[in-house]
Image (cartoon, rainbow over all chains, first blue to last red):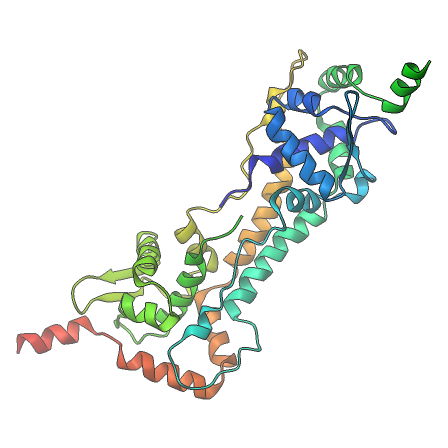
Length: 172
Length: 172
């Protein structure tokens, strides 16, 4: 029972996108290079996050990705659900109803096993719901060594894209 | 991302075993029939629970399964881990270390993404650790309709096995 690599990749990519200047984009290939992962596989996950309205994608040779809304409003759970599909690890198939007994039974009340598994899953989901990309960006800023942050920022700044600005240049 | 059916089957079977008289056994085929599931597939999961020291298995034609220890000491997490292997849904592959940046970085501090995912997973595991088969048996007794409980008890009592007693009879 494992989440796909995509959850890790999606969260790290979203953390990088959370640091973009307004309106700026980052190319999928730069996100892939920054994290040392397969570009085509990463794109699959980024597209799932676009579909879930967490990211925006701008097409074209100077296109790329950015957050679709404020980092404070995107939770870890949003990313997990976008990449994995809505996460429900325990599937109750109501085997209690298959019991070969004649006595009638009401199954209106939920199965206690189902309820306990669901409660645990909700504890998991609530923990992920409480953390946002905003928290993550703040933590990275607080904890990464300054020299590392500076070098990463330089690497990323060199590769930032502003599609509107480029368009204007082309039209001149 | 789904737990196997085995978690549901294992928990329901363990709940039935929690209601056995001392020393008694229940055959795998009766547990399968009681839950309307495949015997061979259920046996696979019961054996995993034997391996994890949650159940005891007595071999032979009059053999079967029983809890290896008191129901109060067997948690839902024990069953999930036994059936699924130790449950860790998020696997951190440390992609932060693949970053193509020259600045040296210390990775002694855990990745914030890894930490957040682990925290959520611990919330899940702790919720499952707090519930035991003892709780489950008490809840079933409290909530199942009395007629249903009686009929189930009768069905199960007809099929209970006492290997030691049977052995004595054979030796006479």
